[in-house]
Length: 377
Image (cartoon, rainbow, N blue to C red; front, side, top):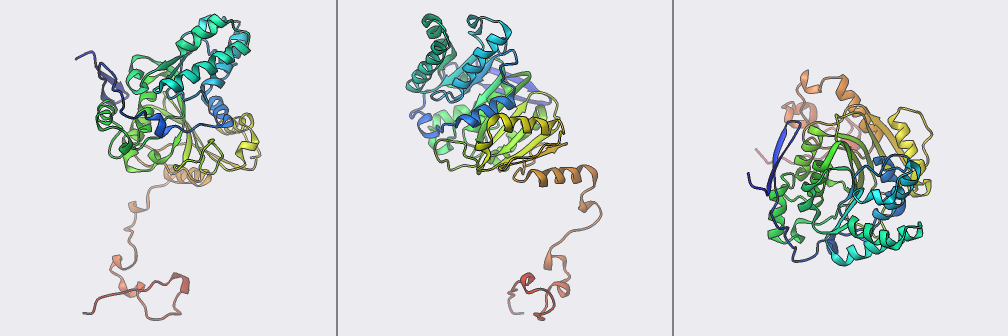
């Protein structure tokens, strides 16, 4: 096997990951098409749910930001890492390997380095160390072709949302060869999910805010199967009506927190327009309490439910209504499907035309009647 080919086995799924010796350079920087900046409250919520908290030892962990942009996630992560150093009595010089952020565009990477340096200087770090850390933490390169070379405890961020037709054909082919879940008309973020998941150490967590289409549509089937075969879906938050981004987006977003471990219970939530006013700290506390089955009054703008069994294989994940989903999973777990006892048909397809076809307009409610057109015999 060549050095550019790696095979990962993930609890029953073995898929080759093929990485070229030299990463391709896209004809058009993908960030110019796929960049959307996340609001601070969403970043803080996602970091809390992932467990990237100062009270945890973040110094000896490796956290990866796969698409740093200008630092929407990177800035708060640095602040939390600094606080973790203080709480654990560690030196910041020990944190050279604690953060790794990728950015494909050199100009954006430069702005992210400036942001990182400014945060460090404001917190009393000497200029030399601040410059050294920011240069080491933020790398200009294609995450999808460098992720295989490292393991991570956290992969956190907002992967670029780029349609297949916006990716140069040669680059798209290389991505598809490297990431088997990027099938059909899959958008680029599918590859970011696969890369992030395969990076995780045991117990590691991938926490993204991203378009939710892959949870339900056909091209997300391979990714759903990978997730359900080897990982635990800990939290899913539908964010369609939440004020999550600085710009308008043409895709419905969702937060997903996925951990490398055996599947446990899943917190499913729906965040509305008022969620941002509640605050990230309160929201995360409520969601974590839901996972512990602790009853709490829900604030306006948030609905939650705890699902005891998650989906299997490539089945779609309908997560629009937390309560309905929890009921559905409960029924599926405790009762057999209707088809086990009866044949189910609809209307004239049953063959009992006389039951369903009438000329009596008063036989049933008018709201239930449909006109029927048949060709003359």
